[in-house]
Length: 348
Image (cartoon, rainbow, N blue to C red; front, top):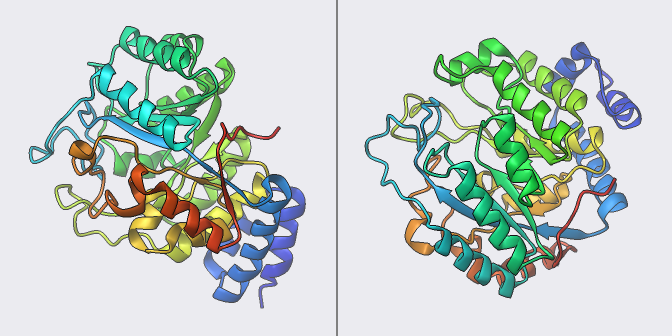
């Protein structure tokens, strides 16, 4: 019989396994071994961050996207998407609202929309940093040139999240159109780290055609990259994509990989994502107990929240709305955690 607890102990000690052992852990884990893993991950989270949970104010700038990623609800081929863009003054209003609620990190996320030129993004960053110098800004605007990344960093961007989605080229090709490549995605992540961003990667759990070999490769890539942030969440199908009928990823599997990543990167900033909260009403609380320490409520205007629909049934009401951040704090307090007002930086 596989001695998985011993394998988990080795992962905690060495912060990595070889590919064969990762595959064995992925294929053989059980609810009992998961619980053992969660306990270790939760303890590591507390050792590095106490019971502090960082909140980030998510501002979804645009659902225009030049790309046609097969899983994504805002892919350019989706003629049913109601497109929108936030003007700079709309973004600043979101920041004003968020700052008053206690947010000290703003996450500017959107599709790859050429309307947001380097100059426009730099102007937005400069304005945010001028009005809120004690705040951090995370960008998640897809693949751009090294020159763009450098200009945005120089204008004040602190962090950048770019999910690699899968670290296996053949799998990447099944999820993306031919003009996109894993090599280019990894080049972007390398550039971001080299420039000096706190850099985040990540993958979808349960994406179509995913195997244990693919997931083991994801974990090895994350170990190699040593990112400061990792964003993972379950794949959830969108009805207007070719993957509409594909099964969704599960809460259980997502928690399993969150815990593994906490053991691999004890100090990582690890979100309990909106997708996790979408497939389970208590998903984010479960994520925290599996090692997550970041939650990202939505600061986007109410008028556009339902338009930024990457997948079906995405949370856009209730405590996900920044207006209900008090409820979110109570939910975290109920599991022994405290939402922290502050930048919530990576602890080196």
